[in-house]
Amino acid sequence: MTEVKEQVALITIFGGTGDLANRKLYPSLYHLFTKGFLKENFAVIGTARRPWTNDFFREKVVESLKGIEEEGFDPQDFASHFYYQSHDVTNRESYVQLKNLSDELDKKYELQGNRLFYLAMAPNFFGTIASRLKSEGFVDNDGFSRLIIEKPFGRDLASAQELNESLRQAFAENEIYRIDHYLGKEMIQNISVIRFANSIIESLWNNRYIDNVQVTLSETLGVEDRGRYYEESGALRDMVQNHILQIVSLLAMEPPIKLTTQEIRHEKVRALRSLRVIEGEDVYKYFVRGQYGPGTVDGEQLEGYRQAENVDPDSNTETFVAAKLMIDNFRWSGVPFYIRTGKRLAKKATQIAIQFKSVPMNLFGGQQSLAGNVLVIHIQPDEGITLHMNVKEPGQGMLTMPINLNYAHSSPDGMNTPEAYEKLIQDCLNGDATYFSHWDEVSLSWNFVDKVANVWSNTKEHFPNYTSGTMGPKEADKLVAQDGFEWFE
Image (cartoon, rainbow, N blue to C red; front, side, top):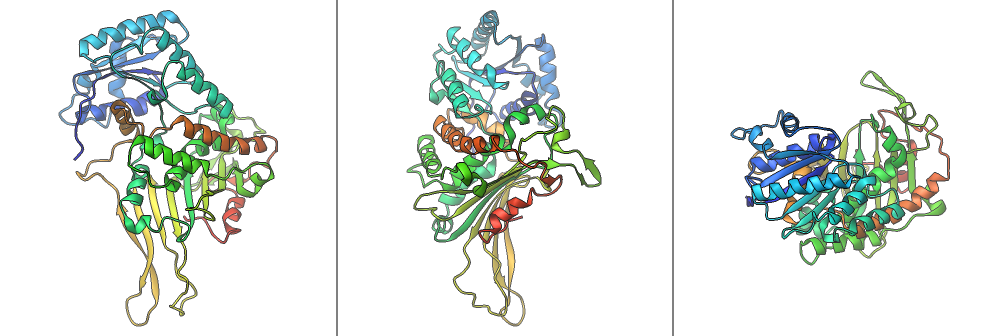
């Protein structure tokens, strides 16, 4: 049973009227409230340019909770802890007013000087906000000061370094929480338990027994209304640099000395340093990029990426990436880590497939081959684990048949597992940065991705090269087929 420890803090959300705040942050804070992690001694300030009042802001907060209300917890009681401050992030006077409100709420709710700042807005303002928070005395309190920032953490290594330096003017590295919501997902956090709490798994977790590892993050939606953002990022920067490389580092890292933030981060960084850098002509051997074109899905005609709003009709931006990654260390030498991610694909799924090597000899000669042993970690939409193995068919003879051993993940009390943002906000309030990205991880990831992005930016691709509703370009299948494998579906 999880110990309920009440958190005492003032949470200030820059971008408090935005989509992220309404869809994710306010519901997550409400769940922490209903579970007792937030009680009487907390307050939330929402800031944005809109001239809202406290009452109107609280109405919006209550609206964001529709469908998730808990019996015995009045959303109005929760919303009474929320305050709104119209704010121009570039104007000093706005910070003076915000500081006065912060000090007032600190006294009213006895918040002990604890401050959590959540930047749920465009990253080009991060440096300005951090600088003002320091110059106007927001971080000069007896309690903690912590900063959560959303991706993108820059567009390349150079811009990421510039962003990081601007944040470090006001906050120490251990006060900066770079959120990656995939790291808050139950089955991502379960990777360490699956590996290190089961000797039958950890003893096989190496190149002697594993043939290949596959990480798939597929989406059925297109870019929708994010065309302008996607033109600047593409799938490589949007998904590979952060989510996928974070997952790969958790799969590939060595067992830490102990399960502390510092030790886990140390091993993740070691894994990322072992990642073979792909550059020059090798990019075309190890990477495949794609862009979706028009297609028909469930009888509905869907437009291609180039027809989306705010997208260049001759765009060279990738909406799909597949790659073969190699970890050049003693544990993983020779084992390919195949990754793929894309939009407008045939199914929405995030999963990890660990394919084990075949037995050295098939004793059941009546069959052409035995089905492979595969451990699948289902991350979304379903959470759980499936182990694919072989057993004897019922009846005479010794024919084998494949079976699946399934585990569906849910909380022991039958309640829904916590949403990723809920857990990560709680971790930040607790000062636990284990499932946030350290600057060393971010910089290594950008260094790896930049080499690929630079090659692609100088080459015009024949886009679109896959139809909406498929699993990507045929070249992605060839990437694994040339090694004798196929994508695990």
